[in-house]
Length: 145
Image 1 (cartoon, helix red, strand yellow):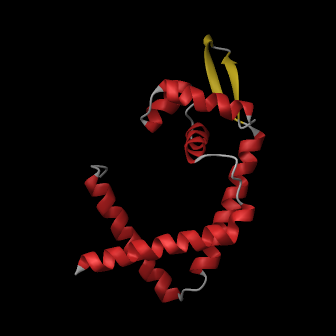
Image 2 (cartoon, one colour; image 1 turned 45 degrees about the vertical axis):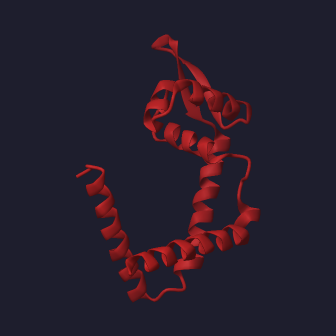
């Protein structure tokens, strides 16, 4: 019986995502791939070297290097020599990347207000409780107590 509801939830979530993407697609920056956004988020979170980015995403340094080259040529990251260790290259996100994240935050807020704004206060509280419960299960299953 649960499988029917799980299937229905998956279908509805996919439909909501598709309709939302269609509604807001003109506001999206389609220049970046999902992998590139993950790399930028990793650098933004403090990973300052190719190895640190690779470790944070559990991928090879060669795969990261290729993407970093693309991101640098597109103007999303900057590489600088570490003044304390001239053999080390430090990664930072550029102004263009900061602007991308600002745009993304604005867009997420607009989407969330559009979707969740239709729910009553009680429905929002119930949704928060459900999501917190799911989050708790996720943490337990990954040993992140």
